[in-house]
Amino acid sequence: MNPPAIAIDGPAASGKSTVAKLIAKELGFTFINTGAMYRAVTWYVLQQGINPADAEAVKAVLADIPLSFGKDGAVSTVMCEGRVLGEELTLQSTNDNVSTIAAIPEVRALLVEKQREYNLTEPVVMEGRDIGTVVFPNTPYKYFVTASEEVRAARRAAQGLTDSIAERDRKDSARACAPLTKADDAQLVDTSDMTIEQVVASIAADIRSRMA
Ligand code: DC
Image 1 (tube, helix red, strand yellow):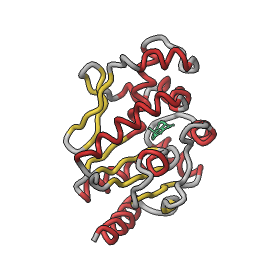
Image 2: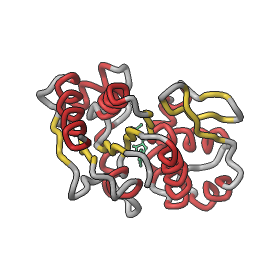
Image 3: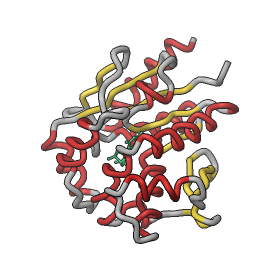
Image 4: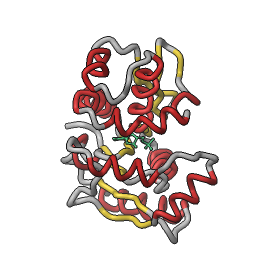
């Protein structure tokens, strides 16, 4: 049996990343940001001059893609030829194309396999769109973190980011393969009127009480 896996899903700018990171710290688990993995593939594809909408061309580079997925302390990292990627992951061009790349089933299959590998040896808090539905469908710890569209747009703007989250959510929810959706057995957490501290405290208390 694998160590525990906490699945945190939700739309863009719902606060799930911040919340997941803090919960991981509190529980002493490794934090895995799966959006960064889809962003890294997107950045690499664009670097190669490949059109992200050309799924066949994207698939052709997957086998030899020079990306690797590791950790810095208890936080996941993505590397390209050994160099940790940072600002590449939030470039406007990456933001604009990541939903197109994330809709390609072969990209998802590759990354889901890498995501599950993290949990073979250690407990994880993993955040994304399909963690409760696809990556860890059997985990009893699933949370779908959301907030109103206005609150999410304001949070994104406060981070200095300008991507169109409504458009990205629409694409992420509409794709055929592993769309953004709440798992039937996930707990819905609406953070619109909650502070980060309140969200973290409520989810961590729920996990602790059920693990005890
Ligand atoms: O969490 P994020 O905003 O960094 O994710 C970027 C994109 O990656 C998101 O728009 C959809 C995709 N994604 C996905 O399809 N599945 C995941 N588990 C995580 C992210």
